[in-house]
Image (tube, rainbow over all chains, first blue to last red; front, side):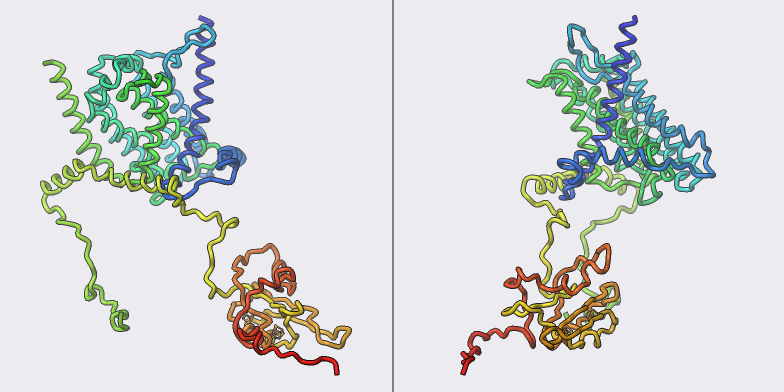
Length: 329
Length: 207
Ligand code: SF4
Ligand code: SF4
């Protein structure tokens, strides 16, 4: 039992530090990829190829003044960023990150806790993370923040339905909520991937994932051109940084979820070992999010709600119904 | 384009080429069909293709647009007239300015200050010469009036400096002696004429 607790703590610390570092690295990647797509160089001067830009940004964020507006609700204003950052990392607890491997004769399961409701837990945690922007926007006594919070609520209600319904069909097929079971279901090579059985669910989940992580084209809760920075208007320094890290951690989580549920997870992929395969898949999803940001304009909140309620939700329901019929026959 | 055409600002009377936007949907069914058609045609992927193509071009085909400005500079038009240059005589390397003071007099922004004195040979020499670039409007009058073509406008356009004095002194504007052979000439009175070689005659110096 002691061993289990120690192992879990070590895993938790490792996941936290690696994913936090990766989230920071993600900001560098984002700047680089966006720059290349606009035929610019991106960060170049801090360190080789601008790699130390991360350190510079970190120093900047840590040393900036921690500002709390006088009219704000201090307590809620202070804990809101922690909600976003914490839930983003808690969600990762039920995600198997790599296949099992053996280190010094001990078999390591790179998942902090194999919950039997894994996917529900992850989605629930990411949904709870939306309380961060919501509370932050309402607590800061700023009309842009309030608009951001209002948009958060509207957006949240719209896409969360789609996320749930789109993931329902794969769950029905696999018959389990554990992400490990999802992975094992697709163990038989590329032909077993759920994306072939559930292409519509994959597209719907991906669209909802963009809304979940509030990336372009659905980045309307902190849309700079319309509402300054939305819920983050009054935030500075490390509190703002926590929102940022939460967002990037969520991007990584969505990448893992999409790969595990639809793209065969960490099973060996041809000659690629499983660990490498899933990292490649997650990197692709991360790149795809940046790619989309460089290519597509964002949409208005009413368009997002139109899309979610009038297009995606009916499609998801139809998908679930058809899957049900096919499974019964 | 004639002047009349150019001055015609009445929107709708000119020959504009209209973009072919197709029919805009009128009924709800039309709108639905448009959405369905666009989704099935995967128009969104065209956007993805464009950005990806640009990235490939930038990374592998050397079409990066960035100019690393302080290290690289784009060539500037030869007609650009910016920070002044004081020229030297090609033969002796002495500065051309004769201290006549015309530029100081004509400067409409009143930003040239100069002082002269007699040197040991009882010739006039320039002891002070500054241009206050905070006030200069780059009108070019000083270069126009100079009888010796001693002051001209050069191509130096980086006007930011911690102190005005950093580039407003005579010595800073003067062509450096070691770069005398690269001194750029402007045609006009005082410049070396293009047929200078022909005009030169041998004159016996000693009798
Ligand atoms: S360019 Fe005009 S304003 Fe500037 S120093 Fe010459 S005369 Fe004065
Ligand atoms: S007009 Fe020319 S020669 Fe006369 S003082 Fe000015 S720079 Fe010197």
